[in-house]
Image (cartoon, rainbow, N blue to C red):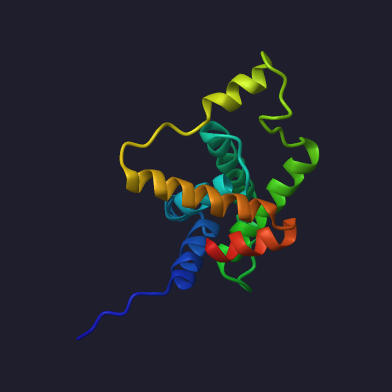
Length: 157
């Protein structure tokens, strides 16, 4: 006898129904399942550091928590979650312009914080090559128009 496990969408909808029925474990399960992919998506989309990513994830998950009682089961939860994340990031970008290292003035607190986020040196040739390749890919993605970058990142995650 084979045991069939529900697909991700069915599992997510079961957790949402449990949460809507008053079981807080439903949201806790969703949170645990998607905290990693959401953090990764935010970091790639343009957060300004580890703490910034953590703050954004918490804000987005609070938005999801507040809106989950009204969730309509017409789409996969991942579509719902990442659309909320994308809207949150777009609104944030409109409110606060991006800062690059070459725009920051020396001695400026933002400059110091940006320098602190520079990657540490790698120890092996493989690590160096992997970082260089990742940096080239990230720069290429960053140069895409916003809508195309969103499509690429949403497809990746």
